[in-house]
Length: 227
Image (cartoon, rainbow, N blue to C red; front, side):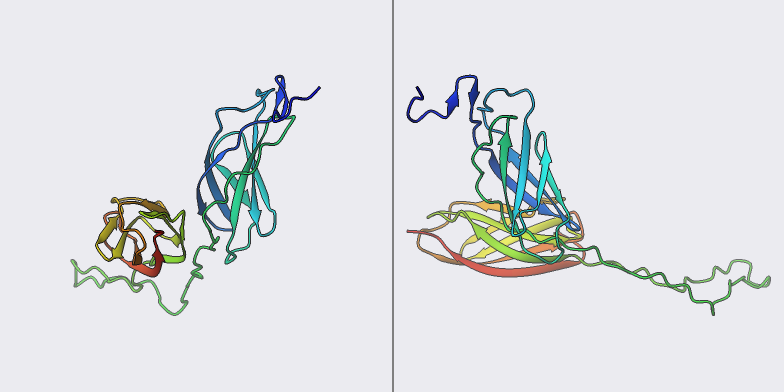
């Protein structure tokens, strides 16, 4: 007879729930990290983690973190959850990930002007080097989809989507500065130590350089801590 409150038998028990991590968008794809549960159920020799998006219910699978989902629509905002299957039962779904938006890489069509012949320095200028005809075009970073999740009386998590990001910084007003480390490619930052029942304005700046230098882009928002 089944025992109330127990799922499955000792040889066929439901696995625990994965803990969601960060969702990092790419070109029509996303990489979702998670932490595996201590209890993987039985049998536990063939474990599959499945991530599913909202909207669209598009899935990806992996045997360990991270899970990659492909075939997404660039420019569409998604969240995702992760489940564990031990070949017999599915776990409960994890909490939803941070919001993410896949972005296509910038396109620069090739430019082959037929009207610039190859230049050869005349013999009476032996040390002349012809200048380049085409300047170097650098691609600036972009930032979008600012969200704040897990807000408590002292903190929460700020997340965003970006391209060409090699470092970032976050500032909040009043009285807090959450700088990102040099060379940090992360697209979320958890924070604490704020004041309860207080509205904060924040600005996230992403940089092309790895030490918060070079081309940059910024986006701003606000949140209010709980009482």
